[in-house]
Length: 199
Image 1 (cartoon, helix red, strand yellow):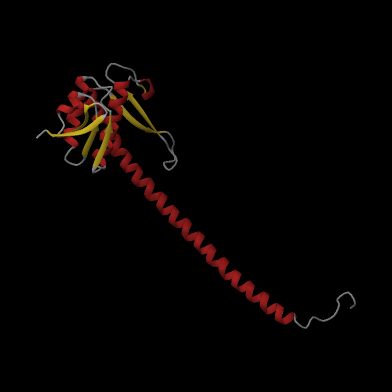
Image 2 (cartoon, rainbow, N blue to C red; image 1 turned 90 degrees about the horizontal axis):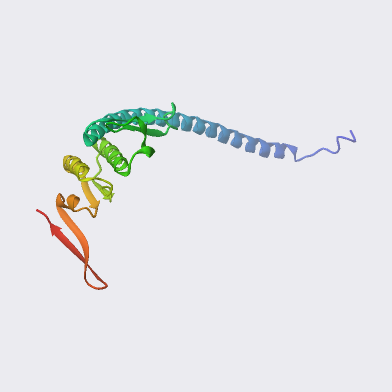
């Protein structure tokens, strides 16, 4: 009895306070567990939708990439390959085979071939999901005249859905523009903007 000590007359009141706190925290825990379960279910739905949409879009872009690459290179083969089975974590590899060459990594191509491959991929994406406008900065710098003509053909096909803004120094590229904007320096140290409507 000495070890038990004196009777605490406030025990009932303390119990009620602790019980009230316990009930409140238990309710909060149940709500939190339900929120976690709902969140996991939502994440699962988003992941499934993302996988489906990504797979569908990837296949469309890959098919268009093959066709456009073959058109721009007048032959050859190209393909986009997923580097991992997990679609949410995968990377994308670009495998190309220009006419007369072995299948190789894009890093082994010449500057012009890399530019044409990038243009092929860009147009493949735009053919699936067009953007209102696209800014291309010196993409034609590494292209020879024959490739610039094929580049022009692709631009003309896409121009109804996308407005292209080209930054270029190529006179051949400028020749098929609808409007030209340039900077000239008539007087030393004084720049002037010049615009020409080619239509």
